[in-house]
Image (cartoon, rainbow, N blue to C red; front, top):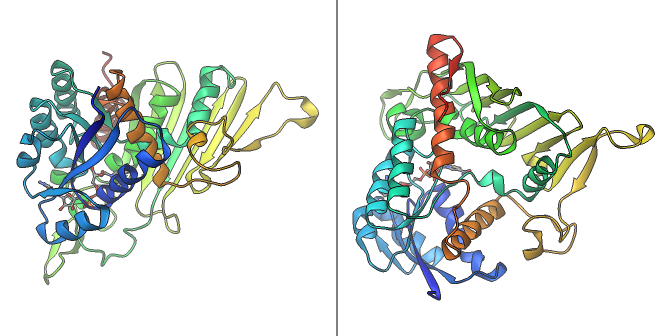
Length: 376
Ligand SMILES: NC(=O)c1ccc[n+]([C@@H]2O[C@H](COP(=O)([O-])OP(=O)(O)OC[C@H]3O[C@@H](n4cnc5c(N)ncnc54)[C@H](O)[C@@H]3O)[C@@H](O)[C@H]2O)c1
């Protein structure tokens, strides 16, 4: 086995920074099968690239993703660009036999996502989608409890993902406001995360029905007197029926006044329940009908014990971890999947199945009817 694996990052914005932080810390906290090397970072914004590479200690740089992908010294391509670029970069990287970790949503639509998954499988590369909230230790613990049957048969999965960064009508147009560049707005951004968690905890979704809104239809174009038309949703919410009979509800908004990055889950089963709030991400609230009646009630587990998922690599009990750790955990699991020749999870199939749900919900926003998700 090689003693090092070389990464090429595409996109040095918000996620480029979060992933760079993960690569910088990965080797120091986890005993990995090989050293993960920050070989090259790539961005079309050449002005910011030099400073970024110096700051995060990327060894070299490229300004065209094709050049990065063609390099023989790169093993993993990490895609942190706007959504419209995920498909072309991934397809090109797969054909060059690179392993890929791609930010969410995987693509602009399910057709693209399916092609990415099929091409990756045909070419036998390892692939992962950046649904980092699966890597919150409290949510991994909830998943263990579900798999052990602690909560019984799950009947409700209710999730909200609120932000409020678009409240100000003077906030300028960015790629996230354009359907062409993003596929959808808050729907593919925030709902993608909670749909992935729904699949993780409950299973496949059968049908969806919902509504979306663009509250502010035009926004200033930076550096111009003109305004641009907003085509991507500001808020999107829908109901869901799961194949196993559970019911779900999903709300995503960038206009949830006062809520900055508020992701809350409430999951109810026949024998128990759990809830989770990202603002208190080290805590898991659980309820069990098996507890003595006199003592029944939701209790809060502080998920910082060495027996809890991922925690052994970090600090003593009670010394909490943060949002950035989810990316470190995600990339650690990805490089281990490569080393052990295992299927990474969540992978492009999960990205595709999530995208099918998002597409069906998007269709229902127009038809105002329940839309079914086809069965594989
Ligand atoms: N997992 C999460 O929690 C999370 C959070 C935020 C964003 N995201 C996802 O990450 C991706 C990137 O989002 P972001 O917030 O980092 O965006 P961003 O706008 O901050 O950064 C995108 C970067 O990509 C670069 N870029 C654009 N086109 C390029 C090209 N053709 N070649 C090379 N570089 C190019 C831009 O110059 C920019 O530096 C999106 O898919 C988004 O949905 C995930």
